[in-house]
Structures are given as C-alpha cells and as structure tokens.
Amino acid sequence: MTTIRQPASILLWAVALLSAMAWSAQDVPKGYAEVPKEQLKGLTFVVPDGSCSLTAPGPDWKWLVGGDEQHRNYSCFNTRTGISHTVGIGRVKKEINERVRNETQASTRKACEAGGFKVSNEKWEAAAAPVPGKTWRLTYDMTAGGVTMKVTICLVQTAEHTLVTLQNAAPAGSDSKTFDRFVASLTVTEGK
Image: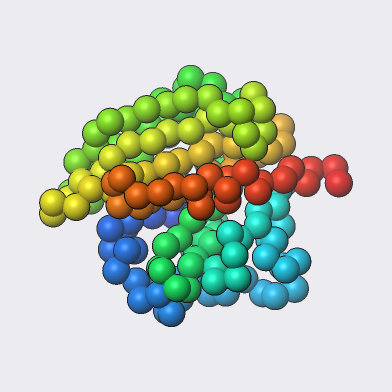
C-alpha cells in the first residue's frame, strides 16, 4: 500500500466540497489560517516538504494552511468567490503507478460515498504538465442534493518519493481554466 502522510485531510476535503462552496468569500474557512507572509514570494508559495512551488491565480487569492503536524494541507483560497484549490503532500515508494492510481480512486470514492455523495464519470489520464511523465489527472462528478460538482485531482511526483496532490471542485459545466493555470504554475524546486 502506498504511504500517504495526510490521508485524512486530503480525503475529508473531498467529502466537504459542497459545504465549501457555501463559505463566505471573505472568511478564512474553519480549520485554516493564513500562511505566514515570510513563506511567500509575492503570489508564490514554496510548499514545505513538497519539493515545489505554486503561484496563486491572482491578488484575490490567499494561501492558507490547515490540519495539524501529521495531517497538514494547504489551500489557495479566492477571497472574492470562495473557491479553493487544495494542496496535499504525500509519499510514494517509487512512482505513480497503477496501484497508486487505483488506491487514490478507491479511497476518494469511499470518502465521497461515506459523505452521501454519488460518484460518476470517473476518468484517469496521464497529463503532460506540469511534470512530463510524472503527472496523472483524475476527474469525476460528485452529486448530492441535486447539485453536481466536477472534481479534478492531479497527482504530481515532484521528487523521488514526494507526491503532490492538487484538488479542485467546481459546479459541473463551469470553466476550469483557473485551476489548469494553477496546476501549470507548479515548479519543481528539489535541488534548487
């Protein structure tokens, strides 16, 4: 089994997606605090233990940190719209392979269903960016209470044993270009 350091925070986030859409745009979501300014370079955040940096999509976005020492995750949160892109850090033994993909898909489905969501239209695909040959993308629809969200999870291997998980949920049919730009902003920092 793949060892992922923050399974609870990453998977519980998927279950809380619909309630996240109800966050007040000005409020920092419960359980999160702003990342200390000394960890930022403008809109760019060097992700601790992630061997990478990511850039917020614009000035309306805040970098947040949540969880505890064992279940730490990060969020790039839009203070105008309440939309959030979540970043988790995990570990893999060697590489993102079929077993890692299957475990991710099964645990995500289990967390969603435990939260009362129906999962459909699951699709895995290799992605050329941000790290060619080391990026995979899972998309699916998650429905509850007549509302359908399109969920996108990108797994990016940024170092030999480091797995960065980027997650987004948006109403089905909405534009995902902002999340795609966010994913493309990932820069590997290992050894730099």
